Image (cartoon, rainbow, N blue to C red):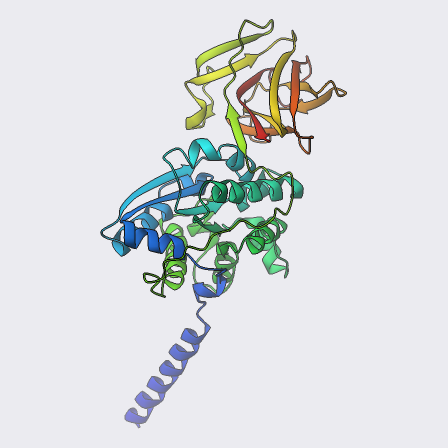
Length: 399
């Protein structure tokens, strides 16, 4: 009788184990392979050199999955000398990524493999659908114009809003926009947002402990890495070494005004401007936090209404990158003597942080020379404590 009970228990355990195993979610189900990563594989294997760039926000900037991917690549290609570039800057999504691309992504030369993530910040920063498409496409086209052999991977990271969308049976709008660009350019994508949501719902781990505040714990970082590693293994499971022809070519653009030639320009007025001052090594004096790229750097600061500052450019879009802190004010701007428009520089995060923020002031302009004019006002957001404008960069999309 005791033997029969033992056999019965073992049978139930095996059935439960098999059932549980059958229900386990597999990372590859959340990967979309479009084309392949042949070009980077051949470059790493045959030339023993490679440049890999990670472009994104704080989830890319912070230690974790990115370091593990670098270690994995070095182990897979032990003879290859890699140049790994961390182009992640907290709070920044696709629009900043498009305009800082030359400075941060191409700074050491041509890129062989580019990882891009912007789904979280594009959403939380409330970019419009048109701007998201123009920015993501701009990143892709800038990369391919520099090196048509560059392989690109989009990653969609998770946040509570995306989890709610998936649980309601919907695909988050920002991911739909990124996917539109990915499909058009045959770019592979990794939907970590959907994978994490469904694995949490399956009881594998918890948001509160492992993905709190958008920034994964060490456990959550490893979840990201393991999925990315699975993706890379599948992408490179075929031996491309005997295939000499690279996959090249750039499709026609989705949007003719995509930010594919983004340029950053530090302010450098030729002479003093009333109401404005050039600070060569700016840092906050109010004890508030600041991002690493926005401290002890040149800043054009305006505090009192005064003369107009002007920025001439040749392109079809223009904006300003500012340090949007607790004392940020409201400016007025005009392009080519158009009617003056207001722009509030204070953000929902500005109370405790001098936040790097990109304000695109005009897009869809005709090709050619244009003039941007900016003036300070005595108005401010009701939550702001000042009227200051701090310009870190002018930016434009060149013709």
